Length: 351
Ligand SMILES: NC(=O)C1=CN([C@@H]2O[C@H](COP(=O)(O)OP(=O)(O)OC[C@H]3O[C@@H](n4cnc5c(N)ncnc54)[C@H](OP(=O)(O)O)[C@@H]3O)[C@@H](O)[C@H]2O)C=CC1
Ligand SMILES: O=C(CO)COP(=O)(O)O
Ligand SMILES: [Zn+2]
Image (cartoon, rainbow, N blue to C red; front, side):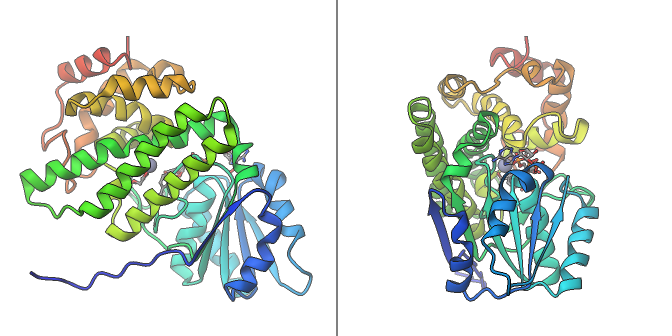
């Protein structure tokens, strides 16, 4: 057996609990994370949450803040510059997936530590060592820095708008399809299949489905389960050294829409719709997935997200070409327009 060197970098600490953001200085001390710090945040989260975090940083610690509006290469450059200017030892991403990805990729470029502080349970990039950055010429994620720590304040995260919570459920149920695609590639193409990381990803998806049953009665309990699922999925990617366990044909559909109409919907919303259609293609229990998503008010029709039917069909027919090296149920040649129409109509994604 040819066992090539495979290095797995995992977070050293995951702090999870209610109202723990104020403890950040204690955590940094425990982890020996000295200043200067660079905080990367979004305009909205900056006012809502980041201010609170900064108030707990003692005066003898040097820090700077940069506000990013999008996960673009320009914002990554600006973050790198800001980090170099103060000689940042730690880059801290506070916010949704975009702020975290910019922080994570900039930390990778300047070789600083990276700390992930999610404010919404909307994506599984919280722990993953990958980042989705616009401007790199790729619709898919690239290698970035793994977080040394994650600070997951359930009080803050469960107060995020319901739409962001549902997006996290969508991103996570997608693993049901991603793992099936991986298995298929292993059977048809002899691709290495990591049973352990696949099981982790699948467990995340099961927990996301469990979350849909709990969240209506108890938001905090539901969000806690979802956060654990998102963190686990990120760990699966870190262990696999690739996003393979967490991203298959359902993500290819999401990426195809994002290319045609950037920011039309949240990442996890597109993945959720992609999951329904790709689960149908795989012969999985897609109706059960759809029902669970609908039970929490997840938008399961393209038009609910302002996506025209034609765009859904176009996305389905081009999805296979986005990452040709990663084999999925879409095969090498993708779907015809007619088969795309049937899948989207049968699943009720389009009328
Ligand atoms: N690296 C990886 O492995 C992965 C990366 N991703 C990437 O993550 C991104 C998607 O992340 P997502 O979080 O959906 O989108 P955003 O980061 O764009 O966040 C969506 C909005 O939610 C706001 N927000 C965040 N937290 C709160 C809160 N507590 N209360 C109110 N508003 C809040 C943000 O504010 P503000 O404007 O202040 O930021 C933003 O306006 C995509 O770019 C996707 O490609 C997704 C999955 C995996
Ligand atoms: O979104 C992701 C996992 O949820 C990352 O997937 P990609 O590698 O397809 O960008
Ligand atoms: Zn995703």
